[in-house]
Image 1 (cartoon, protein in one colour):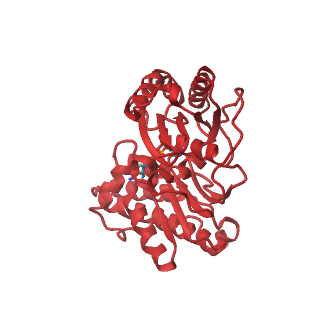
Image 2 (tube, helix red, strand yellow):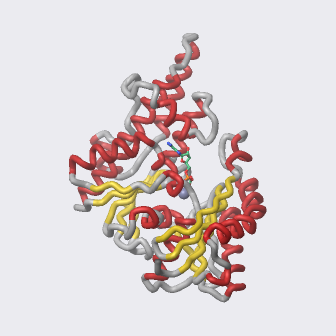
Image 3 (cartoon, protein in one colour):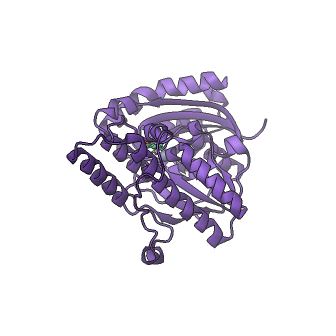
Length: 344
Ligand code: KG4
Ligand code: ZN
């Protein structure tokens, strides 16, 4: 296999990820997660995440090299997420990548976390179809992007995003209301399989004709979360047991319905036939199923990386870094800043 050998570092949230790729080939994807340390707080605690990255960084780099069967000296370039994300967490990755690049005398590539969630699909399905519409849904973001060149800032253009909670955040908050563990997405996914999707008619945010005028490609999930909270409270007040599986299924259906509708509308409006779905929520079984079912009717192709590549990892950063090298992009300088609110 050919292409540049790139090591990628990801520390924007609670996963310390170190990936190694050669071109489109995945060689190693080592991830250390601090998710268990955050579980009792019901959300990621930034200081805890930063310290965990610091402790995990060197062992995770070593593990990635071992798995890939390469030595650090063989690496052609170092890529790192420099935003968006938690400031302190990003700093650990950026400082580590700078030290590595400087020590090895190899170029450093600062990458955008959202673009990396798109680029990762190349490791599974080969060269990215460009142009494509990318829908990124995770604990921290929900965005619709128009991608003409994943390896440049101008080639990834936001069409819309959430105006309140991210999709994954809604899953996590609703899971908490239902007494399911954090992070709640996978637990809701599982509970929903035993539930009825039409048991409760939960609201579809920003889909009324009036909202569509201003927010055609934007999302809103906080109203839905509140509706679930009211529903659960009403059950408890009347002394009825909460039908967890039905609430999970009906909630999940409301989220997936809106996500898929808007993603396909974005594709149709741009005349684009390829839809890519990424981010942790792309692991959701109903989201995948519904997207494939509705897209097929419109002649739109759907690509979703396998769940392990959808959640935060270092391979996605390496994949985008390799693409920047392959497309001849300028490396970053060693004063590359960590930017917690880096735009796409
Ligand atoms: O991309 P990711 O690992 O981290 C962020 O950048 O946020 O996404 C984590 C999010 C969490 O909110 C988690 O509950 C959600 O992805 N998630 C899921 C599923 N698996 C993970 N949501 C719905 N269904 C799933 N199967
Ligand atoms: Zn992410």
